[in-house]
Length: 344
Image (cartoon, rainbow, N blue to C red; front, side, top):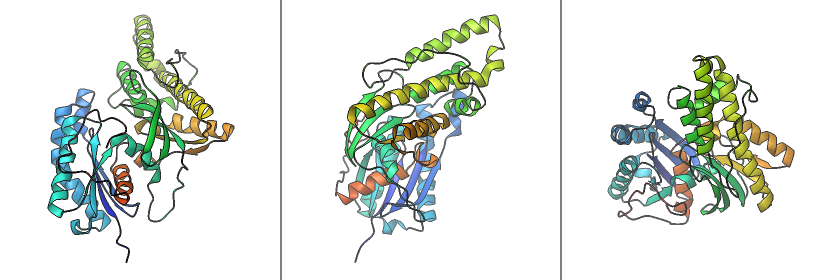
């Protein structure tokens, strides 16, 4: 008789405390608690984040189990984010997962956060089948901390073929939003206001980097100097041109991402193309990728919004595939803020 693989996934790498329950690769519950406390500081404060995780972790896990209709005794394994991320935040999720694994005498599975984002494409839902990429595929992984092009040969056979050499794309969105005086997190606001703006209103230099790599620090500086000059002439410049500024900044970041992705697809001969990470929720990036895919004959895969930003369903699906391979961690497993891509 088949005993279902029921995985509890725990994600606590930054400022979202998340828990998910998955049964044989199908998601039963996916709960996330955000942290409002950081808005007052214009960015995530690590110490406050870890304290909030301590408050949220038990209610979030209880809520996920309750919504899934699963008792702790039913669990096959517990998967957690080992890194990369904020060390204090990771420590809360790691410690909880280790304690639960030991108390229930079930396997412990460590997951690399970035691999989890990519494997989010394989999450299935009980009532509908989601089409998944075929190996090998290219995944553009874009978030606040990472910008990478990854060649995915199998569930855990992944190779970074391009990455940022300074700021990540999500970081550039947030920092430029801050320069414009928009509240944190600014990336989603640039997307929101940019929809009403003209992407050709202002011209910024396209970020340049060798090969398939990315660079965004120069763009941030360019926007800063441009706004300083315009504000000196008209203190209300940003207010008057907010939508156009957002649309123009967004257009140049999206253009740079798609250009590198087109080069990667051409060089590798791979036409299965996916995106992942928080910035994959950006409407301009999603629309441009779909449009490019249609023109170039790509098979394009875009995750549902709830699987783009940090979530525990992606940790649970990675845990599911590791469970099938009996790839378990020991209680000596420790979180790593800069966990290398191939680890976890």
